[in-house]
Image (cartoon, rainbow, N blue to C red; front, side, top):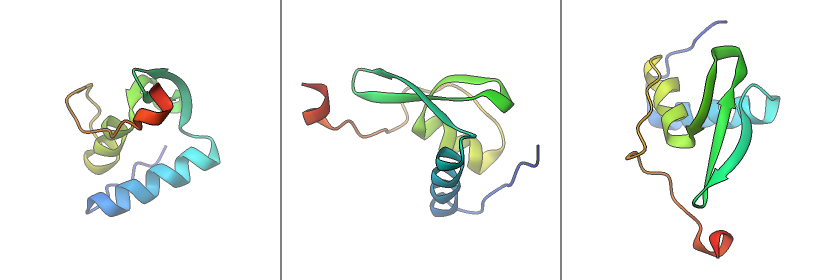
Length: 77
């Protein structure tokens, strides 16, 4: 698979949305109000959106639950 290396956060977020709606990124579950995703073609599972966006920016995936992923409190309660 071709990995594009975006030059900025905006492009990475756009790429996330495109890959999400095309089915390459799959929402799999919810952890404390934060959706987790999988990218089966890259063998990535249980990743937060911010981790995937960082992966799309750098081409290197690592789990980091300290990255900011806004939680919508009305959906949690």
